[in-house]
Image 1 (cartoon, rainbow, N blue to C red):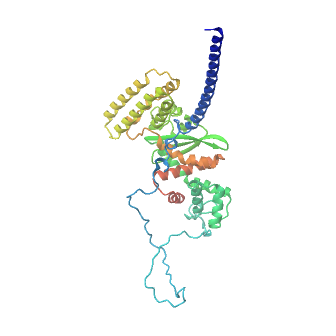
Image 2 (cartoon, rainbow, N blue to C red):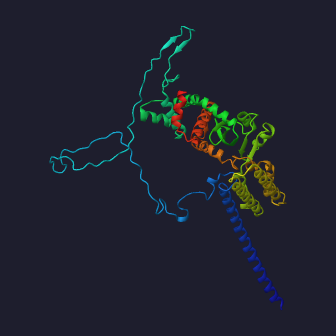
Image 3 (cartoon, rainbow, N blue to C red):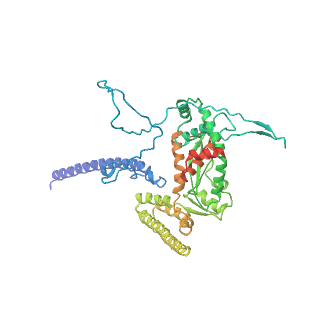
Length: 451
């Protein structure tokens, strides 16, 4: 080959190399852009898919009718129901004397059409009652005696129904103080300021305080207690709402601390029941250092969500997640048959060996190692529910007890004073407890005002 032909061939090769390098550079840039986009999407997805997100909030849990193209409304073939007609409180006879078309005199109706209409009464003004309370001096001991009436409060000039309605509007309907004030003026022509509405709640809280103390005592002496906590700002400072629930009673405590000293304050040193909680270290520390006679059950719902989160991102974590799910399902099915104590102990020992075998393997990924370490740290407390009848494997009950507080936090942002925290924890304790016991909050508050 001539030197001229060789040079020409080399030039063509150089040109091709340059084209490939340029193409490679362009592809790398496009790949970098895609990687960046994937990172942004993962960041958004983590909001819904992380171990601390409740299952109801996770992506894919929505019950929207748009998913699956299902038609909204009653299913075909489903037997319909009609609202039952109430017994009328009042009967109104409606008659016509003359024909509206020609004016002729009408005779007796040939038939009567009955229509029962349900309505609410028009806004009514407040009823002002005067109580003349007799004052006496006991001739036997000289004691000053003042007559009392169950509907006449010892403090203030507003009756119990005003206070109860204000409390339910604020906490059940989540209406701000200003709106409660506006509603009272519109509905009853009762002019009260937002500050007065707050004082109504303070007085209601004082009425309910003895009931709050009873629930606190019940919680302290419970066999099984589900506990959780969530943040709440008080006057701009971080506080924590603690929920302690037995399933029937629910105690709310609002404190600056998220540590073991709150558990010591609420439960004392002699608590000997089982606490069901998430993995927050304060619970294990409380049992280890303050109340060693108590027991702990770590929440499996949190563990399974965290294992799923790792498995979604790291292939090495997939067998761990699968085995944990299988183990939890089998144990839940086992205790559902209410086996005798000996069988429970045998099954727990077997489950502990299965978990130990899973954790004792060598894992290369650092985040998988972190998960394994976390499970090992709580190893003594994963299977309490197997040997202790009545203990659930999750603290979902405590999470449910906190939901209303989370909604309040979204609406009002936080509380503004220490007195506000005391009002909040007292009223919310009673409202949550009454709901768990399927009682009417209004009737229960009326009872409390008379006791």
